[in-house]
Image 1 (tube, chains in turn brown, blue):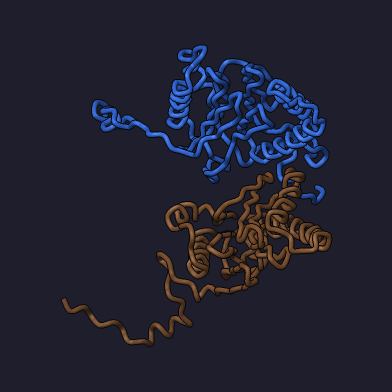
Image 2: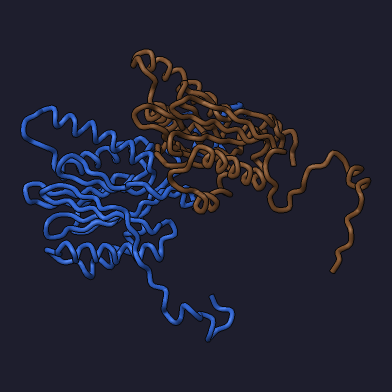
Length: 235
Length: 245
């Protein structure tokens, strides 16, 4: 492995990003790993970025491309809000992202999930994958980690969940993806958006449940050795 | 080497990719569209899948849309380019309506517009990565045409895109005839779609059938086809030849 080459590789967010609608709003979720080749450049990134008070975007793919696209769209939406005189709708935000993604499809490498709440349509999620297709969905998954979640969502997703059910689903899903995708890791961040406002949540690795072949974290081997050995079974 | 974010290895013969704007390859794609003329107009079928490479990523994509009063457009290929074509057609129809002269663009005219659009993009080496099927009825005249991403266009009694050309057209050549009833037309399309479901890896079992007649466009709700797996040879394929697949 050529370390020199890898450290100069473009920052990319092998990522897991998720957006889910529930009865009342949306929940966005993401992992927090940004990698440069094999090195983890940032283990606590925030991939859920604000566009307006009521619309956020989950970013995946090239860190630079996704940051620039969201910066431009935030700028346009700010002007749009002033001209409109009221909060921008999720659909407008999503279409602005689409315009940039589609018209620069040869140069950009970023997949985005736009989610938010507005008074006309309520909670909405729009997926904008590579190429600039705009697709409205009840839930969306993206990033390299999403490959491991198609089956999970086929089984676990249902219409009309409560806010807590939706958030638990998102946290579980990102956590499962982190377990299997080397390009995803760190903490799980969620953002809940509804008529009442926006709530950011943070789930560090040790707060998540353990999956197959994962062990309870210990301070040291010494703690394990010093604790009494388990009793033999009485069969 | 200059440090720009070119995503592909630069080919000596092609020159740096950043120099020209051209669509290189599709990302989210739709598979076959099949259509035929029947007694009252046109019937068209397409599944609702949007593939992302080999992953069947999106399962609720509407690949057929009404255009104006007299036409129906179905598309396979890159979905983002199809969405852009719909925007171009919105502008075209709006312009036509603004004349407010009682005239409206028929399917033949829309097909011609699309042909010019696709061919001109092809000439600039920046194609819209789609194969389109345009069907419609105006003043009793039925019209069914197709345009490819390189601008090849023609009209026929039945057309298909992609795999449909290889699997559906032969069936249609055998069984299509003038003045099919609605029921026979639907059954014929379903026969084609079932074969595509068996044999096209990017097909999904969720489709819509659309009809366009003088009265207007109707696109069915999404539905699934039954498939048959009970051939005795399917149950025990290795019976006569152990190790066979």
